[in-house]
Image (cartoon, helix red, strand yellow):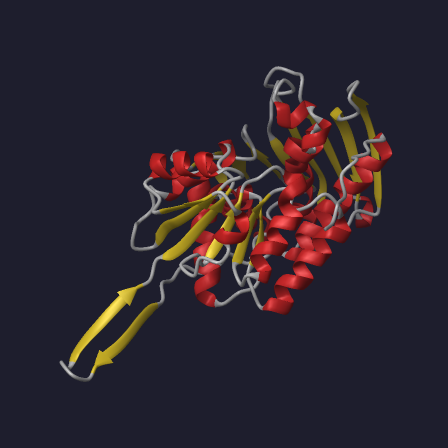
Amino acid sequence: MYYPPRRVSQYFINITWTNHISSFWYEITMATRWGIISAGGISSKFVSALVKQNPNEHKVVAIAARSKEKAQAFADKFSIQTAYGSYEEFVQNPDVEVVYIGSIHPEHHKLSVLCLNAGKHVLCEKPVTMTVAAAKELFALAKEKKLFFMEGFWTRTFPVFDQVRRELESGTLGDIKMVTAKFCVNNYSNERIHKKELGGGGLLDLGCYTVMFADFVFNEKPEKISVEGQLSESGVDIGAAITLRFSGGRIASLVYNTTTKHGDNAATILGSEGSIRIEPPFWAPTKLSSPMGTFDFKENLGFQYEQRCVRECLQKGLLECPLITHENSLNIMGVIETVLNELGVKYDFPYTV
C-alpha cells in the first residue's frame, strides 16, 4: 500500500492590525526573507530563480561566503543588500529568516548547526549530510529549537511529481512491483566529483536522486541493499548499479555514472495494472506518461517550486516539509551510507562537528 505525503496547501498569510491614532487599517503580506550561504554555482542558480519570484513573497537579504570579496561580487550580481565574509556574522543578521545552504556537502552539517543555533530556519542542499548519524543530529536540533529544516531535493516539488502522487493515490497502477531510475552524465571532470577532499563521487552528487526516487515511491527503508560499482584512482565512486529490495518483494533498480554520455535518464514505476514513465531528466521533469494520460507541463520553473514550498511551510508553522520529511531524508541517507561502505569509499574528514 502506498501512503504518499500530502502536498502543502496553497495559501498566503496576511498580517493585519489597526492604527488606533489614525483609525486606518493596514494589510501587509510579508515576504519570506532569505539568506544565502556559499557563492558557488548552485547558489547562483538558486538565487537566479529566487529573484524572479514575486518580490512581495520572496526577498534575498544577505549572502555569506568564505571571503568578503566573493560574497560582495555575488551581492552585486543579484542586488543583495548585505554581504559577509564570515558565516558567524551572517547568522547574527536579524533580517535573515531562512537560510539556503549551497556549500559542498562536507560542510552541510556544521553550517546547518551554526544556522539552527542562531535561530534560523534552514533549506540545506542535498545530500543533507554525509551520514545518518549526522542527519539525525540536525533533525533533533531543529526540533529542539522549533525551527523548520528541509533537505533540498527540489525534484519532489515539481508539478510532475504532484501528478505522480495523484496517480499513486488513485491506484491506477495496481500493486507496485518495480521502480527504475537512471542518472548517467559525463561530469567527472568537475572538481566536486573527482576530488575526494570535496566529498567527491557520483552517488553524493547525482546518484542520490535515484535513491530519492525509490524512497518517493516506496516510502520505507529497504530490506536489502546490493551494489556493484567502480572507483577512481582517488577512491571516489565513478558509477554504480544499485538494487534495493523492499517489503513484499518489490524492487528498485538504480543506475548512475559520471563518465557516460547523456543516456535515457528516465524514471519508471511498474505496477500490476499499469506504469508511469517520467521523461528525462527525471530529476527536473516536465513530462510523464501514465494510465491517466500524457502530461507536458512545458514550463520548468526549477528552484522556484522548492522556494514556494518552503514559504508555504513557514507560513503554516511546519517544522518539516511533507514532500520530503526528515524520515525520508534518513531513509535516503541510510541507503547512501550503506552503498558507499559496500563500494569501499572512505572519506578522511569528520562527518560531524
